[in-house]
Structures are given as structure tokens and as C-alpha cells.
Image (cartoon, rainbow over all chains, first blue to last red):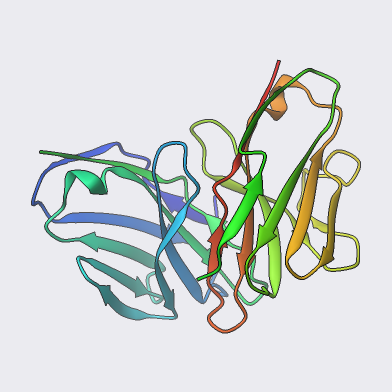
Length: 110
Length: 114
């Protein structure tokens, strides 16, 4: 079992839709959770960073962590074609080593 | 956020040669890491670059193949040695900031081995 699991998609939605991206993890020691956005031929860009359980909101993006179920989510409201990218979840414990999910490819159609 | 610069951004190399990738961060980071992203895949950690000492390698990666240096807090190099087509990949440098613990990435170095 991979330490961080993520459905690779692809996920295709119409413009304006609410997008839900999800990951699960297996290591109870993980405390730091991040979501990255990666456009084609670019490096990963940090979108959201969450410590422990709870919600964090930044504009159209909301990150949720449920440590009891080891479930990580990213919600995108009012999705735009410019949101089309690969979204990577990642988790780490105190070692600082990030373990990445496989990435979900999202396409938002105008 | 930290700004991380990598060079070269891309290169095409011949089998059996070696290539060194440089990584420069604009502010001091506590930890620096090197990742590999193979085509269509996610990121795999190669090693943690330790300042002034030998890097810490993950399972499946060895120093002879991927020698790493970090002479100071803001600079690191990764060498891909004796390259084969299987080494064709994107190599990414990352740095962890001390206050928030966030991990930032460079744009990556896209390597093609013929």
C-alpha cells in the first residue's frame, strides 16, 4: 500500500463547477498536508498548507484534513479553465520528507 | 515564499555521460531535497541534501549514481552519473522554509538521455 493514495483521474468538469479532489494516507505520524498545482512542463506550485486536522480557506480553494479517517480534500469553487492542471497531495511527519500522491489531472471546460 | 532557481532547465545527453544540476534558493532554508518525476508519474524523493556533509539517500538511490553537494545553506547540486535512457526524467530541487515548514520547488530540470 502506498503511503499516500490519490486517484489519477482524469477529472473533467464544466466551468463554474465545484471540484473535489481527494487523497488518503496511511501513516498516523503525518501532521503536515500540502496541495500542489502543477501545470504542464512546470514545477509544482504550493497551493495550500495545513497542519493537523481542520479546514483552511484561501480564495476559491479550501483544504480539509480529517486525521481520524486519514482523508485529505481540496475543494475548488467556481472552477475556471485556468485551473486545468495536475493537483498533487503530499504529507509528511516531523522528518520533513514529503510523500506525494500520484496526482489528479483536472480539466475545466469553458 | 522561497524562490528556487534551477539550471539547466533542460538538456539532452548521451548515454554514459554525466550531468550536474544546480539549485539556488533566494533565502535560507532549513532543508533541501532532490526529487525525480518520471514521465506521467508523481514525485519521488531521491535524497535530502545536508549542508557540509553527505546527503541522505532514499531506498533505491545511491551516492555513486546521484552524488549531491550542499556547500552552504542556499546552494546545492545533483549529478546524474553514467546516464542511461532510464534516467530521462524531470529532476526537481526543493527547499523547506524554517518558520512555516512549507516546501517550495524549482521549475525542474528536464533531462533526456539518448
